[in-house]
Amino acid sequence: MENYDVVARYYDAVEDDAAGRAAFMRSLIERHHPAARTLLELGCGTGLLLEQFQPDFEVTGLDLSERMLAFAAEKVPDARLLHGDMSLLDLGERFDVVICGDTTQHLLEFEEWETLFDRASEHLDDEGVFILVVTTEREFAALVEYSPWAHWTDDGDLLLMSQTDDGDGAMTWEIRIFEHLGDSDYRLHSEDMRVVSFPTDRIKASLSARFRSVRVYDARRPRPTPASDCLHFVCRK
Image 1 (cartoon, rainbow, N blue to C red):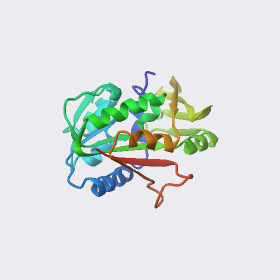
Image 2 (image 1 turned 90 degrees about the vertical axis):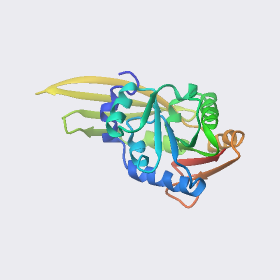
Image 3 (image 1 turned 180 degrees about the horizontal axis):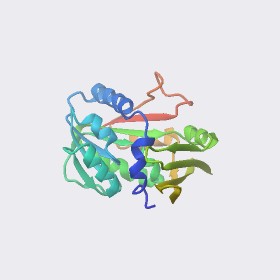
Image 4 (image 1 turned 120 degrees about the vertical axis):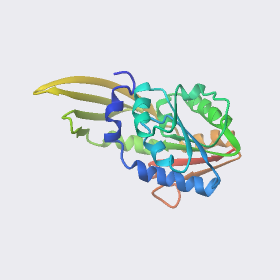
């Protein structure tokens, strides 16, 4: 399995509440840049969020997986979809909003995160907003304690995932997909995918060095706390 190329087929089945996630991000855009009309998503995957934004925004999506982009093209045929590495982004244009929905966890060094922050800033209009979604280190630690996750698809495929703690805010997703070939025959796809998070204060300090203002939100609470599992950093150019 090469990165998300095989996972792409099952991605929508395991991702939850895209409409709710997009609604919260939309509320942040309305608060910080109500006149925004153009939106770029870094790591757009199969287009789950782009589909939610497209009715009101001119949307562009970038992803490293061509298979993911193929699914996104079916979901949001009017979107502009680009294949590429978000850390090397150089489109020669600017957007009102750039969003990155937790994709940074696949960048294992903090210097890579900072490179992404630079690319996002370079692609924003003067009053533009960058929204970065981050799963916290606390949530990573909690996920390791959860029981392994299993999901049967309508086609009879079985998805299994467990997590192991690698220390220093990193963990490995152990993904096993048993693809149903017919009768009692299955094909196994296997991938160990390492992801990482970093301390909130470190992320905010780095963003503050690059953007005029940085606000941090928790969709589940009036304000972020040490118990927050997912944070939204709203950065103003």
